[in-house]
Image (cartoon, rainbow, N blue to C red; front, side):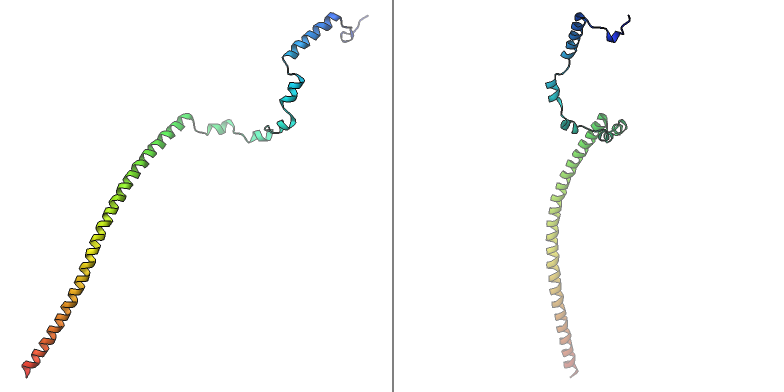
Length: 147
């Protein structure tokens, strides 16, 4: 009589060997308690979904980003620009101090011009007055000579 292989009775020796094999496999696997504490369904909701992964950067996107060497070059350029900016600020401070000196000098010149203009106007007025007086005297002298 031929009994199919999956229906043959198992010996104690075979059963013990299978048990030891399963126990050895279980030693490397997590226990029920460990699995319960591993991750819950709520924890898994916080993980990225397939749709979320579509929004992440691709290799092509990453190729567009700057390399370390490019960033180093950029850092050098920024340092150079910072030094130039500092130099420009120092020059601007000197220009501002010179501008103050120039404005003070110009104020003095403008005051002198105002005084000169006022004196010229007063002198001109006095000159016209004297000229009018001379004309008046000349008119009177002419009238006296005619008599």
